[in-house]
Image (tube, rainbow, N blue to C red):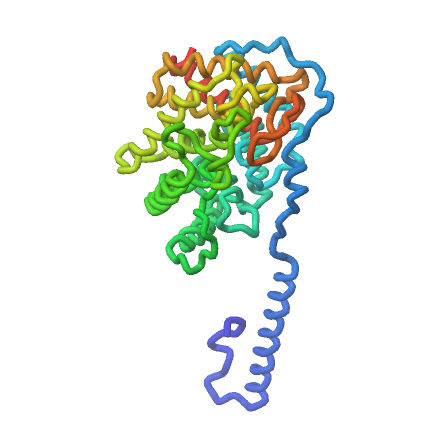
Length: 417
């Protein structure tokens, strides 16, 4: 009985009245502890998932009149010019969105992009904004869908922050969640869906990099082994080896563009190529699966480069550019982020890809408005759709910042110039 000393009773036999008093005291303490526990539970309710509308509206908007474009910006691949464009966009986005930050997938690339921008621009404010947000969220994932890759995407920011300070709480929720996901795989009876775990191609950016990174951080290869298996299933079912592109999901296998060619969504393939780059960045060189990932990465990068329009910006549908009035930023941003990473890490030849990267970067810079808004980002969706010049969404800005940081790194390493 923790509240009483072992010497509470005298050596002589205690009177019955004393024993009764002790029993009553014990019951009273237990009751009090139960009451405290009940109050504590009442004060910490289970977190509720924000509505889909709240998450959607926090992620971006479409400005009917975004104002004039900033024609003073230079698209030259120099430290000064790349960093100037990055800072202008990052500052605008932070001012617009910091009060609305969420744990949703729409913000996950932005958090990664802000962390990269903080390093490139030597300015901690972007890093500190992400850190404060992670602490505000108590390093948790969105509740309600433990096995949905979209809700795991924020884990990439948590892992990056954990790498700089090994506080276990920073990845505790992610590890707990992945344990559940891996148990789902190990016990098929618990899975009532006939779909793959990652049944849509976007998922290959959202979850696999976190699994691969967690293996690197913890030394536990089971996360990476699981990821490689699940990636393989998705690739088997959605990748077209002849076109070297991914269908968005199984419902797109027979959809076509107005010109009759298969419909391959630009941003969906951008997610895959960027996801492959992020996986490869932490995959051991001697991993038996690495050659398969490298081949996919090179094959896709080559195919996407071949499809680049003259203005540098890929259209929402990759095989029918004439069907779309303008280029789109988010798919383009993830493509050139991955390509710049590939050049910097000697997986892609610089002489082949530098012109592609330079043209795409110039195309994106030409969509920055005077206030810093980055336009022409396709709204949330799963296929080509409406696109307005003033459309700006967090994930596209995140891709732009990741691309800028990787290009800037290439300038330093003289792989890009």
